[in-house]
Length: 283
Image (cartoon, rainbow, N blue to C red; front, side, top):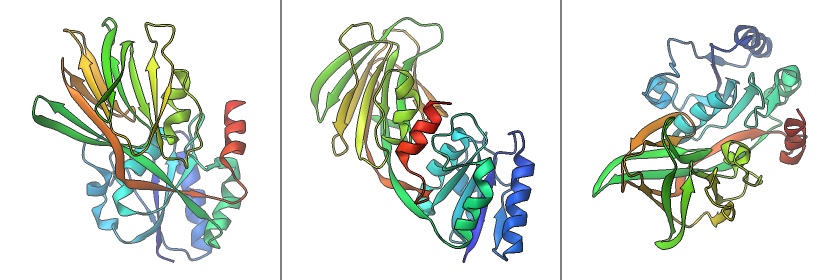
C-alpha cells in the first residue's frame, strides 16, 4: 500500500484527538501515513492545495479528510487533478460529503486497512467568467456555482440560456447551478430537488424568486448553461462552492459546463446514499 494522506482541519474541535486515533490505528498495522500539518496546508490561502502539497503528488493511495463539508469540498476540488480517492470523516454538522462519522471511525478504518472499499466518481462544474471578450476567471466546483445579490442590494436579474437558447429571466436574490452532489447543499435549502449524486446533470434553482411560477429545472450534463447578469448598479457576487467569491458587473457572462475532471469519493458497501440521506435529514 502506498501512503495514506490525512488532511485535517486543525481549526475544528476534537481534530487532534481524531487524528491521533487515526495515526495509532495505522501505525499498529504498519500502514504508511502522511499527516498534513497546518503549516503545510493553509485552507485560508488562495493558493491551491495541489500547489501547497506538491511534494505529496503521486505518493498517496488515499486522502482522509478530517473536518466538515467545507473542508472536504476544498480538498476534493483542489486535489481532483491528482485522481486520488478522498474519504471524509465528519467533524461538522450535517456532513453530506463525509462517508463516516467519528463514532464509526475505527470500523471503517479497518475496511481501509484491508482494502474493503470502493469509490464513486462525482461530476464537477467548470465555470468560465467573461467581461466583454476578456475571460476573467475559470473555476471548478463540486457543489455549485451561485450568482446572488450582495448583502445590501435589491433584487437582481439573471438571464439564462441553455445551449444558446433562451430559457428564463430570473428576478430575485439570484440563481444556483448545482451538481447532483450539491443538490443536498444550498440548492436544497432554496427548494431544489434531491438527486442521487452519481448522476450527471445540472440543477438550476432560483433563490427567493420574485415570481410564483419559478421552479428548479433539471438540465442534461452535456448541456452548456450561459448566465448573463443584469445588475444595473446593484451588487452581484459569483460564488464557487461557497468558498471562492468574485464581484460581478452588468452584462458579465458565466458559461457553465461539465468539467473534464471528476472527484473520487471513497464509499463502503454497507453505506448507501439513501440510508445516509435518511440519517442526515432526520438529524
